[in-house]
Length: 167
Image (cartoon, rainbow, N blue to C red):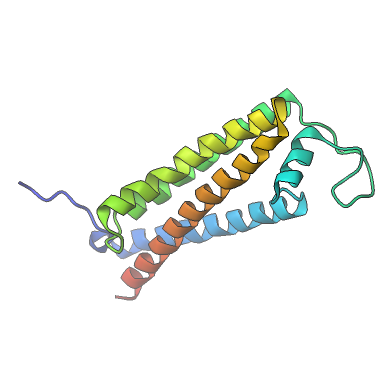
């Protein structure tokens, strides 16, 4: 049987440099996205509920009305996030599958997890908005799983990529 495993150690250094730049850019974009969640108070079930259902005042208790998310806004948000994040998860996951630092069985589980949680997060967002605010707890849980697995892959990839650049 032929061993068809591809490792990053076989890639040319310029390609490794591009992957490092990509991963760092993704981390920067993720940091900005996280700041947006902090700014809009969406890091708690109550904040998620307020963001989707609206309120009579803003999250700080003063100021203008927070309007309820419309069907159109939720469609656009879902479309943009699912397409954009799944593309990023694919690239990072494929690189992660080539890192020897994690056993292959765990690599496959961790690489697939963000896709599952992404779909569940948006399913629960829709359920929170149109059925019951209690689904916000599941939005938070699936989001934590998605971001945790993704950040683990990015950091594991960067460790391997930096090692490759310095050898």
